[in-house]
Image (cartoon, rainbow, N blue to C red; front, side):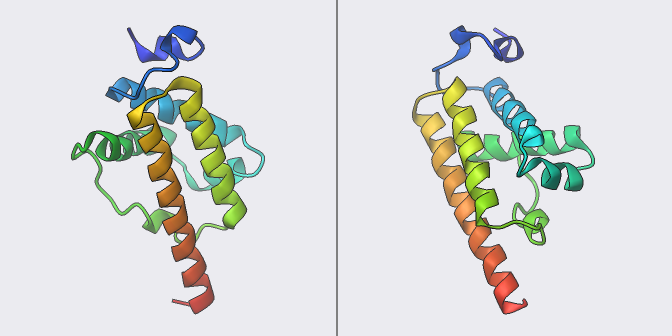
Length: 136
């Protein structure tokens, strides 16, 4: 079954994240919501000029986290270092991520995706806040 045919079909919901197609569905759906979001949309669309390239990078990022595959190259924090964000932006990002995961998936990897996103957001916010307040 092609995951892209599953965007609105209940048959595809409530299974765990088991494949790269599942990652693509999750990432594509999530960033579609981000782009429409009143708080986050402008930040993301203002920074990301090549959405297909960004999405490919995110597929690799989440594959590396959830499947322990060597598919991501880069420094995940650096592009976020100077973004005009506050804690509320990370809270919204997490809420949208969890909502997207829960809309399509359930299981061990789905929970891991939410837990890892929470840890990533926490670390990124801590670093951004520290750098701002310490003029590093």
